[in-house]
Length: 126
Image (cartoon, rainbow, N blue to C red; front, side, top):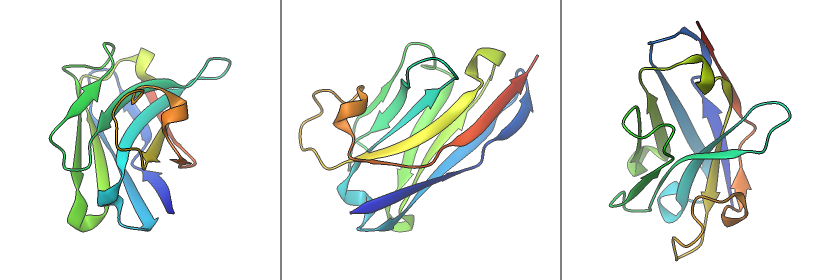
């Protein structure tokens, strides 16, 4: 098992940047596919980005592609989400999730993931 823990959220002005981190305790993070999701009150959790075990493949939602970058440092058991050119619509609680699946089928869906962090709040002011 693995327990993801997010950090790096906060308040930023529109146009600014933040870098979120997802650190894992337990089994080596390198053995998991890792994804980032976000959620605002009253709405479903939405896919943001994902990265495969060896970082060869990354996936992004249309809303963040070109502005966000997901990366991982397996030696540090950490996955990052670099968020640039933030806008108020990016305001949400951001969650890190890990999956032990071998296939990437469904990688953009919440059921794909087995373990979830508690989330970190990102607020973008206009």
